[in-house]
Image 1 (cartoon, rainbow, N blue to C red):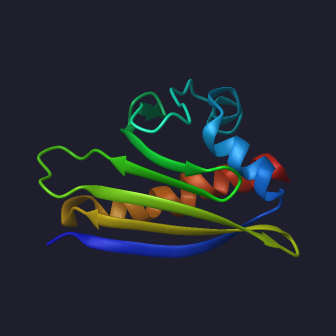
Image 2 (cartoon, rainbow, N blue to C red; image 1 turned 30 degrees about the vertical axis):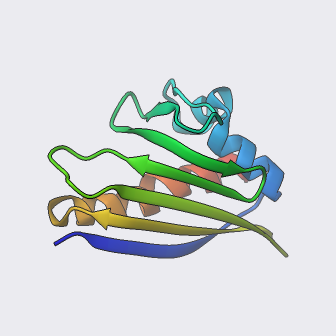
Image 3 (cartoon, rainbow, N blue to C red; image 1 turned 120 degrees about the vertical axis):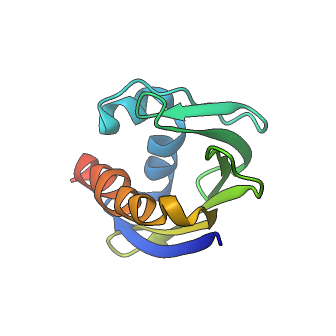
Length: 126
């Protein structure tokens, strides 16, 4: 049975800086160390970390919200990632909500969000 993951992260950059770091392929390459395919065009496909994360962009609200579908092999239900950005005294509060993560991928996905994705982004802004 798929699981959901929700967590808040504080990133020491403004919401517009964090949004740019999450949507601009050149900025993504700076904090991930890998080439990225990304566009803010709804319906466009994206690829991060040399293809280890792939999916489709659903919608964008500039400097506020990103909604994506993440692909998992053999998954029937859509796995949706929603990232909301809120101004915070220390920069930006990032609200992450990832739905329908396959059981077999859940532990690795949570570790990825915590250790790779948001830790790298945090270090990029420090």
